[in-house]
Length: 302
Image (cartoon, rainbow, N blue to C red; front, side, top):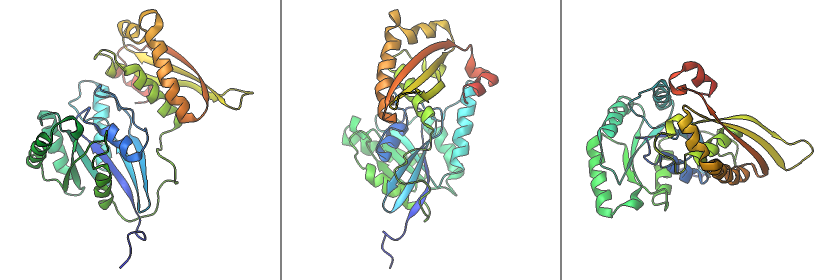
């Protein structure tokens, strides 16, 4: 009998669920560091971010997709297409439903869509955010999940206090094929540094603003390069794109206070990510109706 240390598994997993179901936080918890931006605002994940879980017996590449929703704009349609494409390419899917919210039409819509792929791709039901509710509520949610669809496994977890995160890792690994490492040891994401920097700025800009902003904010890196003559300083020039002048005012804040806060908050995170000092220049620009305009969507990387 071969010992588990001799068989190595590697493959792809993705989390799906309504916006704000805890998918990004769970990705970060499994990977052990921050690769996906988290925000209390729904629809904050826009790109397929891969987090890489390294274990002695396995390598699990987690694809973090945007939340599936009924689209109202061209951006919304593109995000949904991204979700469906991802589902067809992974070895196992985790369907996240938060413990503190009743199962609703959005969850049922996703379950119907997942039922179409469940014949060839195993789907694990994940009750997230168990730290927010009593055990009785978790038990009720597990029963409700069983009625939602036929899962390969159902597991309650909390990314915040790491309750059963390791168990979830085991369950996901069990569903991926045997194979060698796909990424070098120590690599935690295949996102280029510029994408991660842009995401960190966008997360900082979304912190504590009104609900109308999340969909309307895109961030692009205009320039990022080490400063000549300095061995530990990177210059980063960033544009924050909004759709209306009223939104521009929200991002900048009174006397530029909010934008200053955004700069300070993201600077700390970016310096930790790059391991060097940075000079960060933030500009807020108006790109009218960019979510509905194919040309602007392309320009902003969607």
